[in-house]
Each structure stands twice: as structure tokens, then as C-alpha cells.
Length: 580
Ligand code: PEP
Ligand code: MG
Image 1 (cartoon, protein in one colour):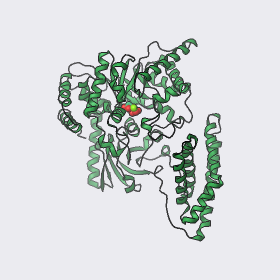
Image 2: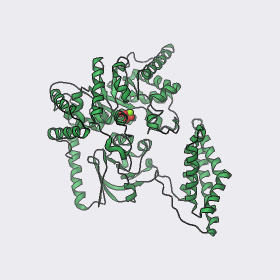
Image 3: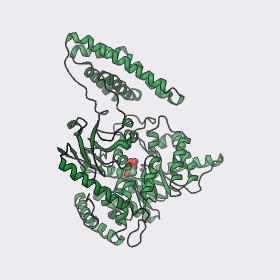
Image 4: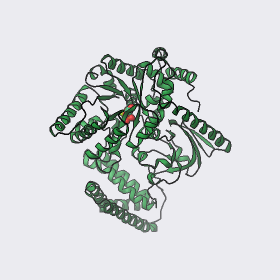
């Protein structure tokens, strides 16, 4: 039995069998070959290349429609690369020189080639890196007789253990069969963690090297409440966790009893509790957990998971579906936020040295006007089907907000001229997730109807800590005095201008932070649906006077750890958090 401690990224307890997903960590064998094996290795390579070529042709025939013209062209270029004589001869030369097996030689040749291209000044060449990797992976799959695993095809219940998981894979996997997720990489606010919470899948992330210590099929316990993973547990441990699992489920059932009650403090302040969603299918979960509305619909997942850019109509249908299913409750849809760790095959944000600080979110939209306007048209068309609010992500200052509003106005004018109906009043807000925006919220507040604080990014940019990197996860401190001061500035500036403030980053759903956020004056909390009942329980058992008193005491403190200890002790004593 071995115990591993990682980041508690999504609550719940699972007991199951390991499914090791290795697509992202290909192991390439390396062994010496003799002179007389050279010809066999050559033949193996040519056979694998031929099969990879057949795969590409099959994909092209299966997808033979207009929308995939670009994909077909890319696949054609992969076919050409497979036959490129200079590529083949450099592999052959190297194999003769180094006398190592062909998989190793192919992988090294491709690595050297792509390293050179990645440093090139020519954008076209840099963009070929992904193509070369993709093509090489296909050939390697055949050499290693490895079939590409597809998480969508999982047909039995498993605990998914993997090095890393792209948000797009997390959305595409067969979620009914995933009892829990365990990863080497990732932090609490990485998008995979957010998706796990949305689908109520327990997750422990940031374990560093767990994939190196297991081979698949082992028994495993995942405690997403405390960030603990136990491999090959003994009977006693299994019994103890089975008991905890049913206590946790019972606690969840108790909390669900609060569903129809308002989130009101004991001295009468009414707080709005909203749900965050990534795809329209999550609306049922939000409704079942008693949300007042949707505070964040991450519209980019429409772009991340589609095979082509979603058309205006496809977008309109998705937005309309969410608005209608929420039955008149407010729905805040955030415009496209690609870039960073959210890669869309449709929108090429290029290879960037520093994607988190690069071309992402509203920056992409302001540059790609046609794309942005299509989304705004789809949103406005959908606005007649419910109570829509629109917000822009990653605004860094007032100029960007003004420009985005001008484009929205332009779309409104065009639609009016064409006689296309849309709602008269669609409140427009912006996310505050960049420190420069937070510090200028006095100006920004005059331009918008509401703010929504994106703490996932705000903390990342304030403390300069990559939210998805497990090595620096210890620095990711929501209770850092710098973060708390910024939140206070945002809320005070907004209230001085008479606009409400929501929070849709993960901090809003962390029950440990609830009383502090109340004390700071937050009006709306938006979170993954599962978090709503616990936050509601706390709000309903505390007064604003108590919340302000707790806030007053911690704002005097100097370090994140001092504040964290004080708040946890207070919350544990008063609300018995952390017992399951
Ligand atoms: C945030 O940054 O807090 C946020 C809600 O946006 P995302 O997590 O999608 O970056
Ligand atoms: Mg963000």
C-alpha cells in the first residue's frame, strides 16, 4: 500500500481500479541493434509509414465534406512529410551511425527537427511543429503497435490516472465511467480541475510522478476532499474509506435539503448564488443544486470541442438552450476566452513563448473582428429567449472595454438595420482578472453594468504563479494579503459607482473563503454547481456583522499563511468544515 499526497482538486471519495492513460507520455524504447538488423529496422519503418499513410487516407474519406477542407489539407501535408526523401535519409544516416532501434532514432530526429523549427523566425515554419509531431506519433503508434486510446470509448468504471489531461480531453471523455481523476500535473484552478468539479468527479492533481509508479489495473482510493491517493490499499483502509464515502454522500444529501431556500445571512442580506458551466449539458446540475442563475458560461468550450468553427446558428442554439432551460433566471455568458491552456484547434493562437501572458481572451476577439461579431450576433439573437448578461474576459484596462463595447454597439446597429430582434436590455460587464484592471476599477465601473472577479487568473497574475503548474502550487494563495486588498479595491470602487460585483473564480466556491468574501461585500458568488449547497449553508448561518469582524481581524495580518490559519480555524470551529 502506498499513499500519495497531492492537491485536493475536486471533492468526493472514489474506490476503484486504475486506468493508466498514457497518450501524453509516450515511452520510447531504446536498445542497440547490430549491423545485420539495420535492414529489418528499415523495413519496419517503411511498413509503419505505409500504415500511417493508410490511416490518413481513411480519415480523409470519412470526413469528406466541405467543412473539413482545411483538415484534409493538413493531412495531405502529413502524407507528404511521410514520403519526404531528405527526412527519410536523415533517419537512415542516423540509424547507421548510432546503431539504435528505429523508434528511438525516429523520435530523436523529429525532436531535433522541431527544436530548430520552434526557434525559427518564420511563423509558417514554427506552425509545422505540431504537424510533424502528429505525423511522427502516428508512425510511432504503428511501430510500437499502440492503438490510440480514446477516453470517449471507456466502457467500464475506472479511476483515470494520467500525467496531464487537456481540457478538451476532459470534456470529451466518457464521464459516466470516470470515477475519479488522478494527475501528475495540474493545480486546483486548472481547467481540468474545474471540469472535474462540474461533473462531480473527485480529483487529486499535482502528484508529480505518480504515473511512473503504477502500471494500470491496481486498486486505488482517491480522496478528493483531502488530496490523498492510496494505491493497493489494505482491507482495513478500504473499509475505512468505504465508511467515509457513505458519510460524505449522506452529508451531500443533507445539504441538498437547502435547495429551495434563499442564501440569506442571519441579519437579512440576500446573496445571489450562481453556477458556472462549460457546456449546455451542465444546466441540469446547476438547477438541481438550487442556483439562482448562471454566473459564468465559458463559451469557449463550444470552440474547443467542435470540428470546425461553430457557426452563428450553432452558437445561437447553444446560448438559446441554456437561456431557455434556466427559465428566466439570469445567465451570464462570457465571450470567447481561448489561448493560455485553452487551445482551440479552430483558432490558431500560434506558438507563444509565454501563452498565459500572450494572445488570449478578449485580445483575440478584438483582433479577429469577424469571429467576435459572429459571437455577439449569436448572443444578441439568443437574448430574446431569457435573461442574458454578456461579459468580456481578461480586460486589462478601460480602452479594451470601450473597444469591445463599440463593437457590440456596431453589431446592435447592424441587427437593427436588418430587422433582427434582440432584447432591449442586456447588461454588459467585464471580468476583473488582471491586476491593472483591478486597480483601475474606479474608471471601469463607469463603463459597465457589473463586474465579475475571475480569481483564478487574478491570483495567477497578482502573485506571478502559473495556476496549472504543480511546482509552484504552494505559492497560489487566495488569502495572500495582496489578493485580498485587490478584491477590496474592486468591490469598494464598484459599490461607489453603484454596480454589483460577482465572483466566478474558484475562490467563490471554496467554503473556507465564504465568510471572508461576505465581509468584503461581495454581492454574487458563482461556482461549479456542487459547491453551491455548502456555501449556502454557511451564508445562512452567519451575520454580516460577524463576517465584517472576521475580515477586520485578518486585514491586519501580514502573511498569507497567518490569514489562512486564522480563517481555517474560525471556519472549522464554527461550521465544522473538513470533517469528511
Ligand atoms: C478566472 O480566471 O477566475 C475565471 C473564472 O476564468 P477561467 O478560469 O476560465 O480563466
Ligand atoms: Mg480567467
